[in-house]
Image 1: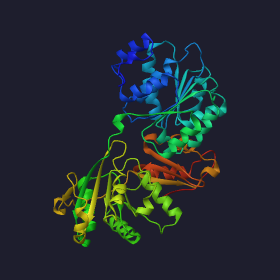
Image 2 (image 1 turned 30 degrees about the vertical axis):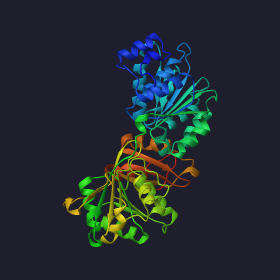
Image 3 (image 1 turned 90 degrees about the vertical axis):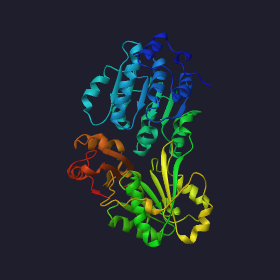
Image 4 (image 1 turned 135 degrees about the vertical axis):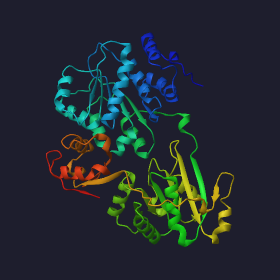
Length: 456
C-alpha cells in the first residue's frame, strides 16, 4: 500500500514546507499513484477527474526538476480552454512559492497577442496554454521548445473532443523527442490510447481505485400498454429530469414515429437508424454528442460504437431481444464512477420473459407511481452551428475558438464541443446566444476568409 505522506517523496525541504502551508497534508489517490512515476521521469497516462488533485500531481513533478537558473521554457501544459489554463497556472504559482523567480506564463486565445509576444521576449520557465495560441507563437518563433523536458496534456479527452488533435501533434513537432509526456484524462476512449502511442514512450497507466467503482445504475421496469408508452416515457422524463437520454427501439419505423411524437410534445428528440444517409447520421450524432439534442431514439445497430461520456439515462422502449443486449444498452450510462438510470418497458404478453430480469436490486413499479407533469418540456443547452469549412480548408479548432472569443466576443464558457470534418465544422453554442453569434459570424472572417454558416 502506497503511503500518502508527501515526505515519502524525494522533494526538497522548501517544497515540503510550502505544500504543508498550502494545506497539502497528504496525497490524494491520483497523487500517490502518479507522483512517484512522474518524479522518476516516466511517461504517464493518468485517469483523473476534476477535483482529484491532478494539477498538484503534475505541478509538483515538473516544478521539482525545474532549473530556475536556466531561464528557458522547460515545461509546457496544454489545456482545452482558457478558463482551465488560468486555473492551472494559478495553482502552479501557489506551489512554485517554494522557490523565488519561477516565471509561469499563460498563452491562450481570446486575448491580445501582442502583450504575450512581449512577455515571451523575457522568457519563462513554464507555459500554460491552449493548443491554438501556443502553436501560433511557435510559428511566429516567439516561443521555442528546444529546452522543454516536460509536456503535459491536461483533460486530454476533452481536447480531442474539441478537435485539437492536429494542433497538439503540430505543437509536439516543435519539441525535442527527449522529453517526459504526461496525459491526464477523465476517460479512456480509443483516441487517447492512439494519441499515447504516437507521442509517448512506454507510458505507464494510472487509474485510481476511486475511479474503478462498478457502474451505479438504478434499474426500473414498467408494464405498459401500447397506447400508454409515449405518455409513460414523457412522465419518466418529467419525474427524473435527465440531462440526456438514449431511448432504444427494436425497429427503424418505431424510432421515427417516437421521435416525431416526442417533438410534438416539446421534447427535443432525434432518430438514428440504419436507413438514414451517412451525412444525416453524422448530423444527428454530432448534435447528441455536443448536447444540442436531449433525446436520441435509436436502434441497437445504429447506436453501436456511440461514445457519450456523461449519459444520464437509458430507456428500453422495447424489451431487448436478449439479456446481453440489455446489459450492453444500460452500460452506456453511469460511466467513470457517475450514477445512471435505466428504465425498461414491457407489455403483458412478455411477463414470462421479464421474470428472468427480476432480482434483488431491480425495481418493478406500476406506471401510476409516475406523476404527470403539466407543460413539461425538454430543450437542449446548446445549439449546433455549422461552418462550411473544415480540414480541407486547413481550419482548426483554435481558429474557430479564436474567432468566436475574439472579434465576436463570445465567452469561452458559452462554447461547447467543436467537431471538424473534411469540409464542415460543427460548433456547440449556448442556445441563448446562437442567433446573435450566427449574425455576427456571417459578417466576420475566420483565418481571413468568409465561410458560409447556418444553424443545424
